[in-house]
Length: 299
Length: 315
Image (cartoon, rainbow over all chains, first blue to last red):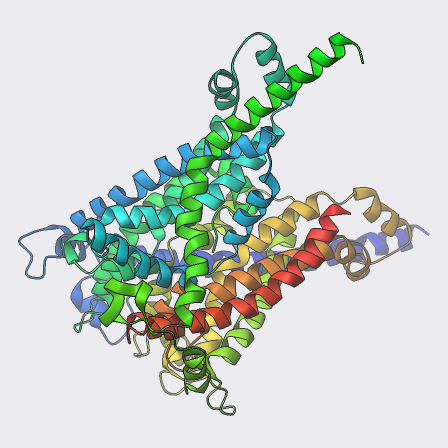
């Protein structure tokens, strides 16, 4: 009897280690295939031209070679890319997009979540539909329409960062509205009713009660909209022609398609574009994960 | 009805109208923007698809000549769109095939990852965060890193490893060979988008009542049986929802393929074709017609999503 029991335990122990072994193997596989590309991006950005163009890949660069970064930032470099300007352009687009989207969607989401009015469900459904709309479908009419409007009002539809912000709102507002509506619905109505009874106006209630309670959601939404604008590629590709106005994604694409390939420069620019986003994500992970499942980043 | 009741009712009514006025005031800016840059353009693009719109008359779009179904005919007969046998699938077939396969793959990896993370272990929080990296990182940088890893020269990482393992004799151009290119684009999609599926599935896995597993233990079920008869029925609904949502997004996606292959080598999908007609050939009418065809297929997916997923949510 005792021997049987030992045997059973022995089997169990064996089975456990096997399962654990396979389990760790899969985990390691996942971690490697996720992290290696990021390692490759950062390490390649520090390689010298010789290391990049060699017959064999260099897995660990010999020294922290800053050649690629010099090409991006140092005006003395022979093929200076003026990447600082591109970072600035991206910020010029991403920050206003995020601020405007958060302000507008806060107002709209509050109305949808709390107030009763006719046409509310239609509006919410219309916005949700938009969420599933292809960006490439909207870009043609937007382009044609804005070209027409621009002709009449005397502005140029291309190479206009203001127009780009305007089109980015089309991509960020539905997301922001959806996420904030969901959040406002989780705030108990009783708190606001108490405020109303105490003589606050609706706007007073929003300002004094709802908004302070929603700070986590507001931070999440502003980071999301910021990230969408920071990463956006298609609209920037279509609307920007002038190299001085290029945002980072378009600039990286341009460097990549340069006749003389310089992967280390592409990787350096990619590193600069990726690191802030990853750091932002790690710092705010707790808030952001919830938003991810709410479809925060439409992708 | 007493006077007091009447007064109460009118006051409530006033309150209601006041409230709905405020609601409209709050939602108006958003509504105007959403209407002018989403809903109106969407309708306008139907109009464009029936007219001859090009660079030459872009500054006078509203007077563009009506051409009926000509744009649609041009698109359908275009060699880039039409299915012409196994060697050349055309954008429509490629799009549907690519979306279905890439989405299934993404959801499958998402399920495996979710099950990995569902078991407690040291450093699970960090691992979970790392698993989300591909999804939050900018598409431009991730696409270009993969292009660089899959470099066709012998110095490309994958080529180097496979050559050293003697699995291949000659370096392979992964992203510029018909068939292979589509396969690797699908791999990239799985790599980049599985975290979304993972998060949704993980949330559901963690909500499964643990007594179900205990009951299965009592019945003497092994792990495979537990997976098939407890886990799968519990996550089945979320798998379907994630699949359909991702299917629509993958179907719409432009950036990934454009950055990886430029739409060449058998990877030309409808969004890329739309872009090429509109902004390479500057034939906006034809581009809009392509987008409309894309939209019709999308609406079919959407109908599935609404009838299946939304109904389940209500239940």
